[in-house]
Length: 323
Image 1 (cartoon, rainbow, N blue to C red):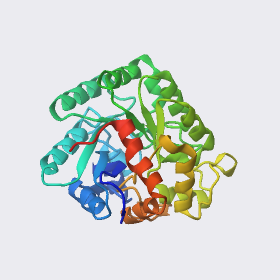
Image 2: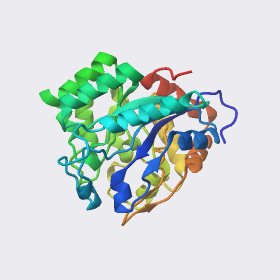
Image 3: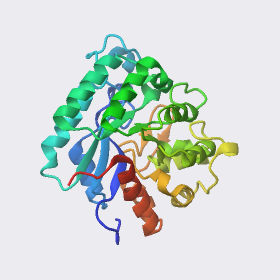
C-alpha cells in the first residue's frame, strides 16, 4: 500500500478487454475488465488508469491466431480496433460513475492496415466519448512502426496533431523484431516534434535509447511490466538490451532499478504496470509477478520520486485526469 502521498496516483499503462491470440494459444494473460483493474488498483492506492484495449484485434484471422500466425485477411471485422476501442469506451463510461477510479482512455491503432478507415473510426469515437491519446503495439500484430513516417501512415499522425493526442508505443530491442525497434520509434519521434511520444517498457533498458529520450523535448518512456523485465535482464534474454548497452543497475533488485531509472531520467519517466501483463506466460516463458508487487516496488522508492513518476510526469504527458 502507498502511504503518505497526495491522492491522484496514476497507473500509466493498462489494458482492458480480451486478447484472442493469447486465449486461443493457451497463453496468459488474455482478459481484464475495468472493474477488475480498478478494484485491484484502489486496494493498493492507485486512483487513475491510462487504459487501452488488448493487442490482437478482430481484423486478424482467428484460425491464423490459433496457429500463432498473423493475417490481416478474413477477420471478423475489417477495421483494426474499431470494435475494441468502442467496447473499451463503452465499458469505462458505463461503470465510471460508480467507481472512485478514473480512466484516461487511449485509442489503439494499427500503424499499417486500413488506415483511412481507422482514422475515421477514431475520429467518430472521439466525438462521442473523448479520447486522451493513442496507443500501438506493432510487434504482436506485425505492423511496422516506420510506416508512420510515410505519406500514408503520416495521416494518422496528422489526426493526432489535430487533437493534440500523445502517442504511447510498445518498444523492442529483440533482434528478431523488425516492427517496433527503439531506434525506429525514435525516428518517428524526431519526425514529428509537435507531437508527444512515450516509449513503453523502459526501452527494454536500452541505455542509448533512454539517453536519447532525455535529449528530446517531445519524448518520454514508461516502466511498465518492470519486475518481469528485470527478470529478463537477469537471464540475459534477448527481449532486453544486452549487457554492453543495458542501463547499469542491480537487476536482482527491481526496486533499486526503478530508483536508479527515476534518478537518472527524472521528468522523462512514467510509472505503469502493464496490467494484466505484469505477468506473462507462453510455451517457453514463465514471467510471474502481480499488480500488488509492482506497486510495492513503487512504494520502495522515495516519496518525491514516487510522485514524480506516478503523477507529475503522467500529467505532463497526458494532461489532467478526469474528476
